[in-house]
Image 1 (tube, helix red, strand yellow):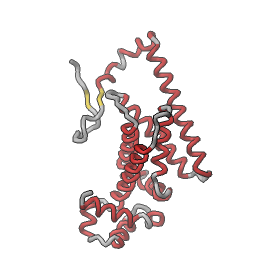
Image 2 (cartoon, one colour):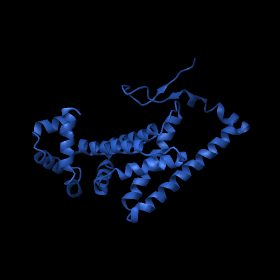
Image 3 (cartoon, one colour):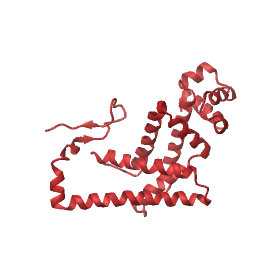
Image 4 (cartoon, one colour):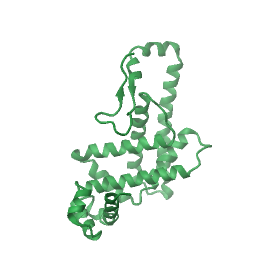
Length: 230
């Protein structure tokens, strides 16, 4: 862990007790700086956007905990849909406090922070697919993550309002949502196996075969790449 990561972690841990009352706000950030005994200038250097950077660090912390739990969970006998459901469940269970998540949802629902929230959601779903061994190298790389983003986002909203014992209603909701997605995938597979239907869509949709996933962590600009003719 670098020195800047260590400072950010200290600030985040100090901020958590203030977020339920003041949200991921400048008030929370100032309190965290004081309690963590970090020089204000250093705190601003590590977190230029203050509490926004801490909110993103909290989300990142949850993702890392999710990955750790996935690696420790034996999923070898699970159906793939159950592996996905388990990964989402582990991610939600990695959150320490619903109120911290709720306040984060409020922050990232604001128009000027919506892109940060969307990117954080996408990274979470990308990490789930990667941890489960996804090796897609075409447009499916995107559709899998986009679909899971919808499932995960709606499940988080349901989970925030769920007061059932053991969050049982949330897990039932999650299972239904994944069931809907799997039904859609079944229809797609049937269409692909149908010679007439696949022939109709092969030409108009052939350009999708040229779409590729991001080419390494150093890529800049829009995600993914286009594989031209030849």
